[in-house]
Image (tube, rainbow, N blue to C red; front, side, top):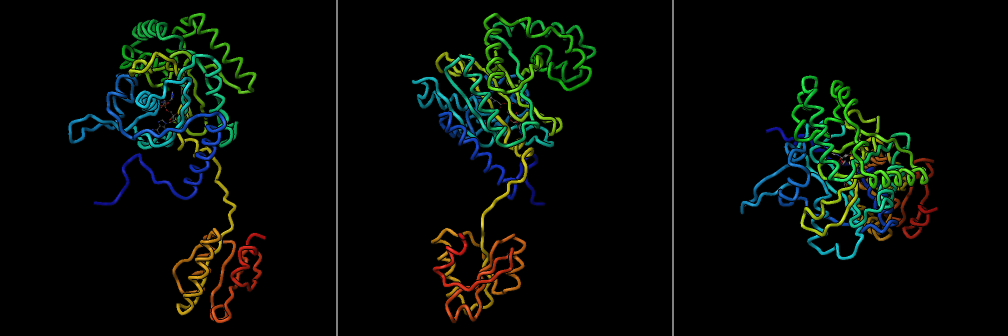
Length: 411
Ligand code: HAM
């Protein structure tokens, strides 16, 4: 058998992992400034946590969950998203006693989708949630945080915020019914995929990418006709808030989101630079979901972003750290080598040695690793108890006793 990784998974190293680390740093800084608590939930949960709340007819539940039975016949699923596990964790750990509760987390998520650019079967998400407020200020806060994080990582010209309101759940039921009727009348002209969704998930036909579907849904009844006054007022408040926070947006009446639990505000940050996987970050309100999962009847809003997709839009990370390579030409000077390695460790100096007693090979490795300095250990250095240090950029060489090296590198 040829050794290979599983389709849709990927290894992280080099520049890619530098970008991930940079993303983690920015996310935790912004979360800290906004007093969001970090939470890590298990990678697998009982399947029932996901199947109903995400929508039994949603693509995620129908086709994409990694579900298995463990030895005592428990039906388990690798998390396909974070919102429901976060709610489960908040309920299980009695975190909802004091509201609002603001949580964030990041880590791997699993969906068995068809892999393509920007779409993996194991990918990583950043997730922010606010439980316990239906004030439009919470909507504004959660979107502003998303905007701030994205702006710190990628140029603003690379993404656009799309927003929409789906209205209250009751109105959405009526809207879905009317949409089903509308699409049913046009059934013959729809794509096969959309025909399948007419009764089960008609909202999703609105964001189909097939040309025929797009033309038909352009004339579908608009969601705006179904919004209650209260939903309209809240959406207006959000739009005003975004404008006053100087966050530009477009109102996209066809924005519906793929999971079933949304109502009122929904939003996505989209890009034109990743082909068809054009959503970097998506979220919205899910009032009703927390009580459906057995918690109190409190509202919630949040978002998740795909770390891989953000990373694809980021520039290479430049790491400005001085580091030293060691070059030694004979094993008999080993004790001098051990001394300098201990010195580097004690003084937190970044160093590398390639385990070769060969000056030429070590120098060539120092060059290929873009080292700033090389410490040379030869007979003269060993006998007279000093080290030769060469600046690989200027070519300058100095002879130093061990206690002078740290200061020399810091100057
Ligand atoms: P979602 O839209 O399913 O929402 O996923 C959020 C983000 O995860 C997407 O915008 C995308 O960047 C990334 N993503 C999704 N699938 C893949 C994939 N196969 N490969 C790479 N990246 C992917 C949710 O998951 C909701 N739980 C968001 C939310 C939180 N709503 C409220 N709170």
